[in-house]
Image 1 (cartoon, rainbow, N blue to C red):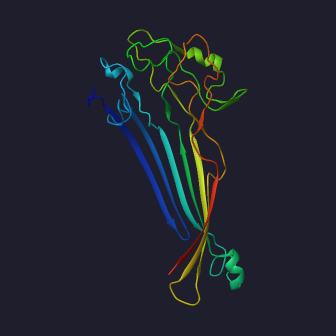
Image 2: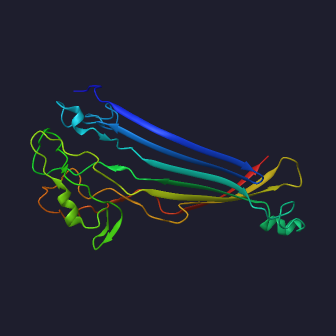
Image 3: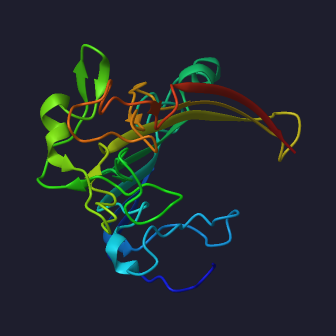
Length: 263
């Protein structure tokens, strides 16, 4: 059955600061928000819809943070004309050949930080408490700290997986469990670029631009995913690799070079 019966609420505050100075332009943006719903996704996404409801008799049972909820997001971007070269603060009198190498460069950068997305939740392996097709979530009974911890089996969301597993219990008949109970670690990223343009002496309006760009400059990894998904566990003991990350949420460092001719 398809039904437009769910509800969602988003509340947020947005702060933006922009400044333009001689040779420097920058923007700072901050978003503080909260989003709640019964399921996140389009009801027409596939045969069951991306927003599958576990308990059709009580839609509010699985109301929680949206899958895309981010409490804090910061963005900063800037453009800086490096003050080195002819007609600039440093090296005003340098010759054209030296200026062609070290003068007239412009540096750009983008920084982004967020506080982390919710994790969907762990599924129960003992049966189907509310739905014949999808198992209920495990029911969370106490808070548990999350982060990125390097254990003997690899990066893990829990510092002590054997203790963390006791934070959930098997759902009772009719319970849908706890949706989006914990959060994945926050992420941050830095992208930078360096560019320089040369005006061609033989004709006005002809220009060459060379540019080098780096994405994820620090090559810092951030992890995503969990080893226990729809197969679930019984709640009596930690399954193998409980809490272990299974994917990356970002890409390794990428560098690219560009050559452009304008006329």
